[in-house]
Amino acid sequence: MLQYLALIAEILPILLYLIFQKRNRGEGLLVIFLYCVLSLLTEVVYFVIQKQVVFSTFTIVEFTLFSFFFYSSLHDRKFKYIPIIGALMFYIIAISSFASKSTHAFDSLPASVEAVLVISYCILLLYEQIKDPNIVFVYNTKKFWVIIAFFLYFSSTLFLFVYAGSLSEQQHSTYWMINNFFEMLKNILFCVSFIMKKRYNNPYAVDSLEP
Picture 1 (spheres, rainbow, N blue to C red):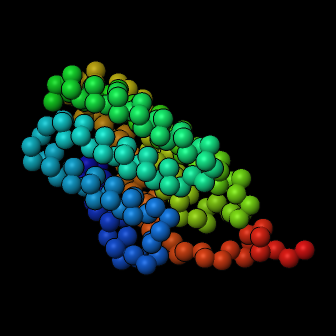
Picture 2 (spheres, one colour):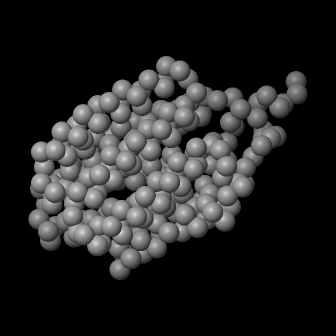
């Protein structure tokens, strides 16, 4: 039942992005929309061919989109090197794992490395937003909800990814409900971001306050 709800939750942010397309121009949200579309297509393709290689390939594409989103969102030039270095590390691990593993085995190592890197990127981007004098209430920005969605999902599923490769089929079906639940939560937070109105002029921004 939870799997079907998770699948429905994947469709919802795609629809809301298209409905509120004018609100979602810029801010890197097109990358998140593409991620949602590819995630849904991956679920459909896996349902048809039932091979783990589908998710292994998606992990690489997924991380590429994440890296681009965080790279374009960071403003400090010193911080921009972090996603580049992280991407190089990830690609080396993911491609070597992809070439050596069975097509039916879950790629625990690339998924775990991806989770650690994305969690680190989220913390870094939140830190930069908190330090930005033009953003007084970070929860009023669209990117905040996207960052929180990634942070909650990957921090909650990190250890599941670490041990997923060693789980039996019965254990996998039991514990994978954790992934499905936080997948739903992630997509709900995407919906919040896509529905929010853009705030072109923040009356509470420090730059707009007169002495």
